[in-house]
Length: 285
Image 1 (cartoon, rainbow, N blue to C red):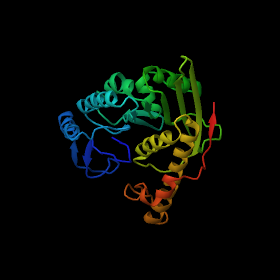
Image 2: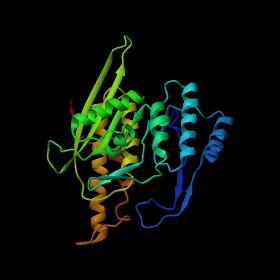
Image 3: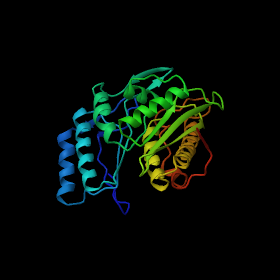
Image 4: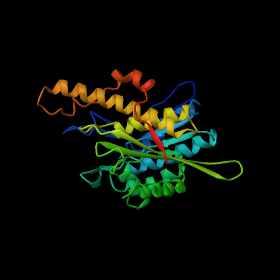
């Protein structure tokens, strides 16, 4: 929950010893009653007015349903509230998609969460799950984003895909679409493609970072998805390049970096996150 004057409240949907990219983890998954209790505390103190809500990794369906109830209540208080949802469900490995959260989260995301979201940041696999439509071409992706718009969100960004990048196999494609309805009822849609260099490593937390930075840059550039995505993806590149460079040094020459080595270098990248040099440009489609 992000309020004005840069005040924000963090609620952990899970409290784990470490992220699940490691071989072992321990901890707790918050349920809906526990979330409701925390929110009630905020409400009793009348500090529950927010400008933004951002959600990510969740493992519990009742928790997710409670998020929807809270977002709807917050939007009644502040109709300008923007809800950014990263529908974290799964990804593709070697072309095959699989879910890494319980399968019963999908209908809750599709039927309850996405309709109240203003900005969503699925990867290709998650966009396919939400729409029931496979993406084989860029045209398919644009049509899937239109289907997602029709479900509710004004802004849809497919954060990563296995589509062929015009710049070549060493690049990863992200696609964005922003749809706005003018006062006279006409719709304007801005669509963009971003191609960023692939980094040969498996990172954990990149989706969280992407969603958080997209929230920040769409706040700064509310009607310019191109600039917001360029700043988001450029900052991502700075963080990932710094992380892989550091990981290789820690692992030692000839050794493969492990999960601990590949922890994102967030603090070291503070300046790049706050004011990224634009090293990745977006193409308007």
